Length: 375
Image 1: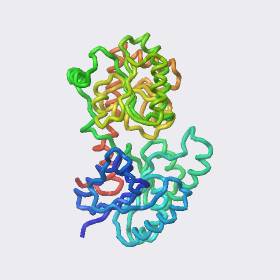
Image 2: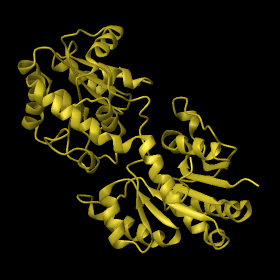
Image 3: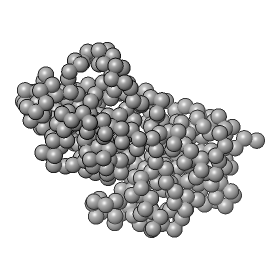
Image 4: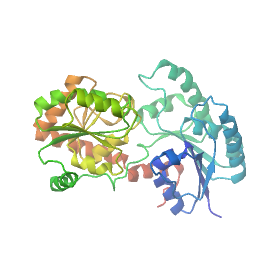
């Protein structure tokens, strides 16, 4: 009789975006693989749930205070009590809370339950209300699983000190090292030719939804100054979002239509990373940002704003630059443009540090946590 594993998240797109390599490994290891989540895939650019024997629709709502989650709890309890899972891996705040609450009987019957915290809402610099609301909830529910798995060191240190349960750490859920990797300068020129980009352009890329949090407005506001110091400067903004028209108006008002390009949503973003020189991010909030890791794996220096996710990955002046000061932001980009040895030093260190965050590395950590290290 095969073993059974259940993956849970508030919405199915979360599983598709972050956990398919793990479902694939479970499937190849002989497990029957189930997923429990609200199906939102019709909204999500063709994401597909793969390596799954059964998808159970659970009507989770993102707000932990929604009365609809009572129904989700009842369905989850019936599922856990009847299926006899060997392992349950739950994710996202609501999916994690409801599953742990519903797993009491199943755990007594031998089911192991793990909760992956993709970034606590409470952290250094978080609003006070986040600590008041979310910290007590996570502390209480930490006791209702076999281990809490954190993906950042900041969360790991906090949970290890404050939570009364086993706490483990993974370096994220893994970036695909077979898709995101460094290429030679000759290969870079070929990619640029394919994309119609000049060899001499100094291209900075920012990837993310066009919204207030990603703060592309800040980057656009720096472009004229950057053009004065880097004559061939170009800015690419990849992504769609609610601020598209507003950003287009800002670009036009600053006479930057020849310098700033809105690329739209790109399914092969790795091509644009390889064609770029530097990757930028001005986000106000981040968990553990994939776009930064993808840049680092491609040996592209990063210049980024200060937030918890960027702090986790970037050591200022060592493997990238991190600042909220506009003058320092511009200077970092200009220095990478003008100083080839600095560029190479930063790029090499970024690449080295990113190796801990590949799927291969995080899969090894995950197997150690669940006690199954057999290939």
